[in-house]
Image (cartoon, rainbow over all chains, first blue to last red; front, side, top):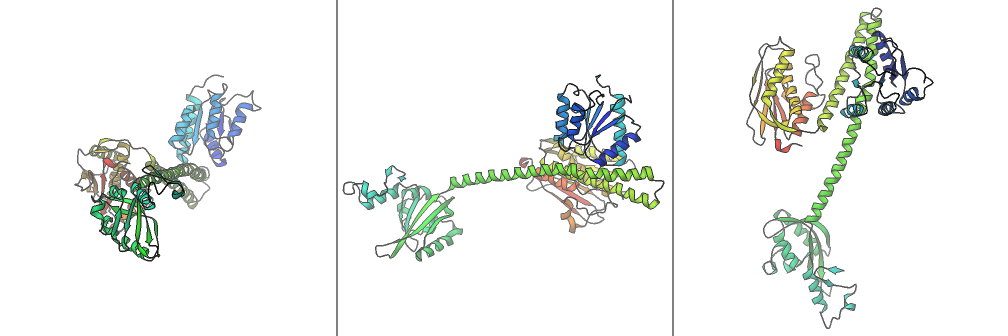
Length: 141
Length: 387
């Protein structure tokens, strides 16, 4: 399962560092690609130099992103035949009902509110790895 | 100019109407006055009514023959008689009063809003001989104005709500994001560098951890509070006694070692939004549970008490830490706490939430208590006034 890769779409460098460390600490050694705004995420998924590289097995998506909002990234992912089956886990500070509803309506597979507490965050990332990288079956390319 | 009643008066009436054949000039003016929709009244400088047109009869309910000779104050509500004196004073000085908005009284005692114009009348030598008063019933105008004002306020309110929404959004995201860094990196310091940090160093990192956790709680409290203000209410019948029983069971299960005697009145049927009223009871009973934690003989009571103007008045009473009655007003203000966090934990949002929910149900909340002698929180519910 370690050939599965993760696309992390996150504009906050602190959150990025925390996330990468938490993945490592949980022995999630899968390759992680980081996109630092919505436009980079779209570029990577649709026009990347990596068209021959495998698409990510799961996308961790922040909502409040510069340039292209996370919801728009989500819509683009779901609208394209190549990416429509990739699991998308929305990872955000928000817990507004409107955001949750919009994300699910637009095809998110999960909505996770980033826990502030360090230990809760570590637990959340462990659960994430267990479920999305091990337990969950993804559609074949 | 078209005067109600069908008489058409041209710019210069004398040019277009053959006065000799039809009407004299004064007959013409009398016809205009008779057919006017505005009450046109003549009076002496002293305020005695001398003429009274049909519109005045309709508006005030007095016939001309019963009111001519009486004082103008007859159609004035008692608390506004001074106004008439003021108007007559101005007339006496040769001044007019134009479009003065006030209230007048009908023969049947009902009052209505009017716009009044009063002008002095002079004879051919310029001597002041009386006053003319033209009054228009502006009830409809007032209603339209009030409706427009209401619509304007609704607009303002909607704008304020939109602002609140975006404020809530930025709080939930922008204020929480830096907390991840505070909590996360201090956590990493402890986890990865705990062995090279001194005891003090670890203590400081732990303080950063708990402070950021607390700030996260406060931000969530603020979000909850704003949600309570905007959430739609779905009132239905609920048994508050049964809710309190469930809450008491939950509290006991979470802290099985505590001995608390509950006295719960059942049933207490009420019309309320189930989820929100449960939040009220959870806060009040949860507070009672919390503030009796240092007692071995803790008592918590839920019941109703007769209320004058509300359909239901409930109370939650405990024999816990209580509070200084002088500060009772601060209890329901967000983030105001009467105890330190180390004495009794909490964010100071609970009672503010209680007040907001109860007020949205058309009720009120208040508290009685004394330091060391427990507290009683009362709230009323009036299902008819749910907002």
